Length: 379
Image (cartoon, rainbow, N blue to C red; front, side, top):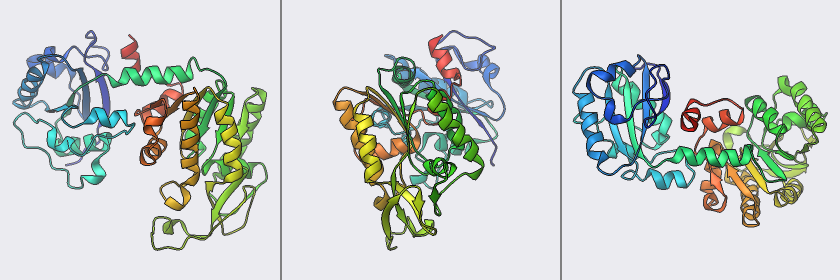
C-alpha cells in the first residue's frame, strides 16, 4: 500500500508547544497516552535526540512501547552504529544502506527495501519505509550528534557575515529552479560565476548561438533582467567564454562504449547539432583568478555534465580552485546534491571549509525561506 506522506524534522529537546508541530517535548515525555496528541494522518517524522549517557536503553524501550500499540510504527537508529557521522562529515546527504540493517524496529519485522543501492538517500529510504508501514504514521528516531547547528553556523558565516570579496558559483541545468537564489545572492555577493547548462540561457538571451545546448527559452527575459540587476548592484557576473561541445546524443553520455566527439569553441558560437557539456580552458582561467582572490566562496551546482568522465574536467577544476582558495585562507561552503556528490567523488570533501548536507533545505534557506527546524534551534 502506498500513501503520500509529508516529511518533517523535529527538535526533541525544546519546550513543548502544542501549537507548533516542529517543537516536541523530550523523547522521554512522548510516551503512552501523550503520543496520540502528536500523530497526524499521512505523516512521518524524523526525531533528532542528542546522544546522552544511558539514554539509548530508554529510547529503544520507547520504540517498543510505540510498536506495541496501534497508533504508529517506530524505529530507532544509532548514527554511530550505521556510521552516519562519518558520512555526514564527508558531506554526503545520505545514510549508508546499512541503515536498513542497523535500524531497531522494537520487535517488529524490518521492512525490506529491495533495491538497496538506489535507496541510499535518507529522504528516499524514509519514504519507502513509510509506504511499507502505511497506513500508520512512521516515526524514526535518530540518536545523533548535533549536525544541524553546524549547518546553520556554516551557512550563516557565508550568507550573513561573509569576508570579502564574496564569490558565489552557481551551476546546474535550469535558471528557473534558482531564480530566487540568484535574486537573494545578488544582494550579498561581489562576484557571481554562472556555469553549467543554465549559462546557455544567459548566452542565448544576449544573442549568442548555443546549438543544441539546453536552454529555457521562457526564461530569456529573466536572464536579461538578472544581468541588468547585477550591473545595478555592482555585482560582477562571470559567464563562460568557451565551452567543451559534443555532437553525441544525450543518451550516449552514459554509454562507456559510445565514441563522444568533442571540441572547444566560443560559448556564443556553438554550431547546430552540437551541445555544450563542460566549461573549457578560457572560462576556467578567468574563474580561477576570481576564486583565488575571494575570501568567502559558496558553490552550488556543477559546471558540466560531471557524471560523464569525459565532461567532468571543468567541475573538477572548480573543485580544485575552491580547495586552493581555502588553503589560501578563504572560507568555502559547498552545498546542493550534485556539487556535494562531485566533491565527494573527486576527493575534495576534506579540502573545503564545509560541505553542507542540507540538500533542498539549504536551497530553501538560501532563498530566504524561514525553515521551522532552524527557527526551533534558534529559539
